[in-house]
Length: 370
Image: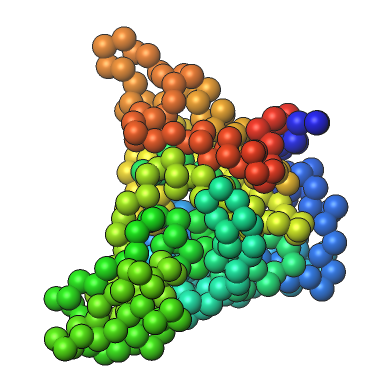
């Protein structure tokens, strides 16, 4: 089997070749012209960034990809799915507002923002997989209905999976709220009775007759009937239906790999990772800490597994940011695992190995410098 091509450009620029032009050149080399965009709905999956976090990707990069899709006859839209936690991106109105606050709007990018799993995170399509962990993946409807998938990934650390790249952006980011519940937890949700108002919205929206109001006018979950679909968490406006956070990092990573396959299965796809502002934690936080390394560059591939592996290797090989150097020896930590340094209990390779096993991509790659 031939190794997958991963195309890479560094951060150097000149008056005649700025980073936006380098991105366009990179994406052309990676094979965007091999995709038939004519009249095709093209989901550009991106993380808009939690307000307060400044490490998210600049909208200027998205505008380049939008223009490239449009000139090839495609119908692009920027998308992400709602969060499982109750932050500023937990429902579509707030999520779109957060995107606009961070500069993602039709004027700056050239296309609209569509939240993939609807107003409350309950709009999804079931993609049949029948894999080790996932029988059917719950993928946001707008993403599942798209003809083509382009992922724009901010490559950075992650507190549960070691790093977040293409697999994390696709597998976790395209899951509906219920899908995220499945990914994060093997346990059914619980009702925090102090917050429950007895509004009955969770009862009405439970498709499995698992939630009922008791004599105390509080919601109660019958765990024998609960499937863990997450609808009650998605529709509760009082933070009463809650997730039991418990999925171990290794299991979570493998589930993410399976959900990634569900997103790209049977569709043309292209994946672009920006190895810059490599913060130790996810962009879901409302802040970002100092980077683990200096900015490296941008990489692209039609294979998300090879892309993640190549980006990880580039980060490993690079010196750490100077504030992380060993103060006694002056060791710049070239070759060290920067993500294990940040989150010692994580194994970022487990998702990649499982993704290759289920044929979501290949760990074998050839780095082609542009």
